[in-house]
Image 1 (cartoon, rainbow, N blue to C red):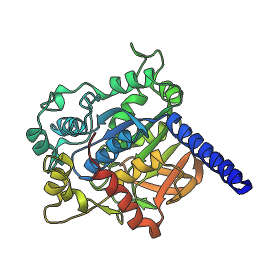
Image 2: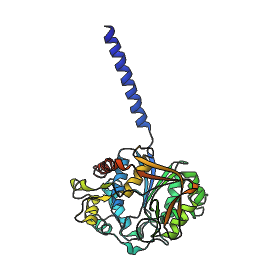
Image 3: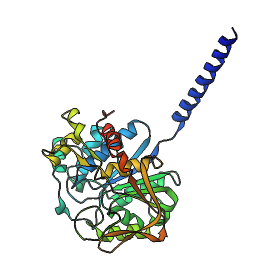
Image 4: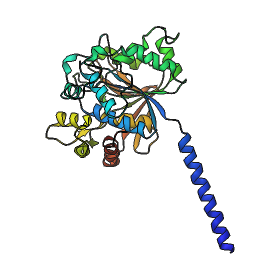
Length: 330
């Protein structure tokens, strides 16, 4: 009888702890994410959007907008098609209306996806200006809550920094960022350096925007780029034929099966910044040259943080990403 009572008491304790943990999980607020993608050249933007929507399905994040930083005509319609596939056709989409990266960079998949899954946006011209959209979303957000994730060019953030007060907020761009943004996770550059000018990566297609955004940002910046050895996408052929992510990867990769995961890693670092699979370097300085090249330096110390994957965890992280990329839409 004594042991039975002790057993029951122990069971009640375990059930109480489990209930408390479940209650804590249920009351954890999702992270508000403002996602900014170029959606033109590489297919990892597609993969990152699959991860984005799956994280939202799990209740880990709230997607505030899926903004486009490319001026390529079918980037925004492609993003809209992905949002619709995942059951979120109402997500705001904005595009750069002024200067930006060349439209000649092109895409092997954006137009094809836009035409196969047509929506309200026929081209980028049908989408609103990204900078006022940023301001509207930030103004409505809780203070110090929004996590911005850029996996494209920095055109929109540069414009946001210079934006004047408007109907959405009496604050100028930099002050609005300082009040509403919690963190910025940025995919781009090369580490320890990328000193040769070219069209690779996200920093050099719009060098003035890169230089301006990073050098004038009033809060810490978290950089992530090392996805070369984290290869994902092979399991997308197990998803339905009407999956635009699967279609885009096939058009981009042709006979290949996988692609490095730069954009997906940046998003996961933003949502799981303390995960033990990251190697984190801080503090430091990501020095940006005026042509968009960069060099990571120990001095002068700025609020710059570098996220990399522990090389021993590359395959494990790849499986982590593939799981998100192949999850069913809601």
